[in-house]
Image 1 (tube, helix red, strand yellow):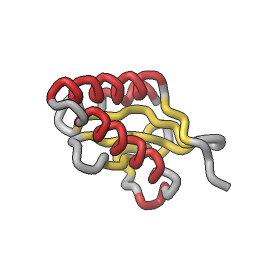
Image 2 (cartoon, one colour):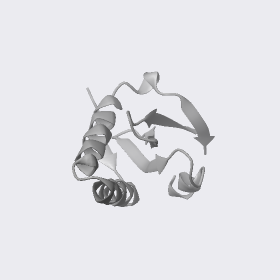
Image 3 (cartoon, helix red, strand yellow):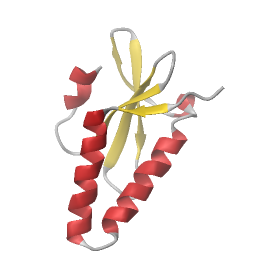
Length: 101
C-alpha cells in the first residue's frame, strides 16, 4: 500500500513563491519548475532510494533533489503518510526546516 504525500503549508508556500520567481525571470520557467517539483513528489514513494540527511527525535529525515533546479524536497515518513517538510533551495538557509519536524 502506498502512502499519500502530505505537503505541509510552509512547503507549499515555498514552492509557490519559487514558481512565481522563476516565472518572473522567464515566461514558462515557473511552469517548468512546478512540473519538476510535482515529478519529485511522485518519486517519494520509493523512500529507500532517498538518502537520510538527518535523524530527528529518532525519525529519519530524507531528501529528494528536484531535477534541473537547485531545490530539494525534504520529507519524512509517518505511519500514515509521507510528510513533506520543505521545498528547500540547495544553497540557502541550511536546515531551517528542522523546526518543522
